[in-house]
Length: 392
Image (tube, rainbow, N blue to C red; front, side, top):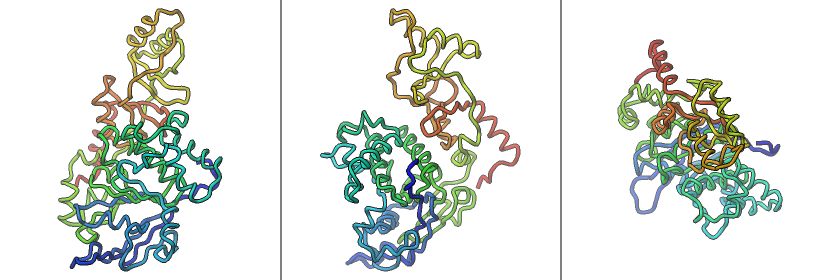
């Protein structure tokens, strides 16, 4: 972020947090003690009914704790105005939770408006955040939620959660309602955002693979939100605290290593690119000089739009019936991209739908190179030869 007012994450401390509901003998949450480091992502996992969502919602007091103290950045928020607290803690739910009668810009600008930001500042913030989550402001700011796909709604939901630049972002199963490919992209975007913003993110998920991918730490809960293990993904997978944790995360295997390895661990390779609007003949010559027969199409901002065979590119140019044909704007939804911080598992998934034996790698949405299937297998072979990671 370029704004000097940018807020980095704040430490969250839960001390003796308990929630009892009238008419129930057992507490929903019993004596939870937990410290969430500033600027880190912590994933809450556990079986249904274990209290993970209740614990999350007590942080911004959507659910009031019966006992205990919650501190954010050292300040006891259990004694502050709950409405003011919620305006300073971002909150993202499944499906984005957008207000259907408001435009995208109005949804994102809702909390800044309540905080009395000026109109120009709100408009600038809306455009900044839409760009940050990969949506063109000129295209999307005036649309209504019903005009967006599920993934786009979720992106807007994340933007709204970040609108007032809160130090803390709470996420309740944020990607559970979208298809697997969209979920992977949204996870990648969250990793890229966190790499830039360094917020304190607390996220509830039922998916252990998502927890391993996104979390700096994972909190595995038993019933009544009793802590079974609170540790790094490496140790959760490789050294589960007991049989309960081992059963929950699943048995260790070589495939689990791929959930810990990142694309950056393997490394990216250079590959020929062209820009929309370039002369096709010049592009074809340049690509052949590199000994390749395909090219990655980028837009003017360096974002990948397609990975196309030269023969297909030239056929498209010939069908136009014009001299000096240029690279057209692709009209497909590119599925073969991963972010630098994506898992190797995700990269392999993208490779399966690619006809090029690899996946395009981006860095905050901009083209960074490619990762090849052969590179992944060679890296894992070398890792195993050197002893690799603990297989659990």
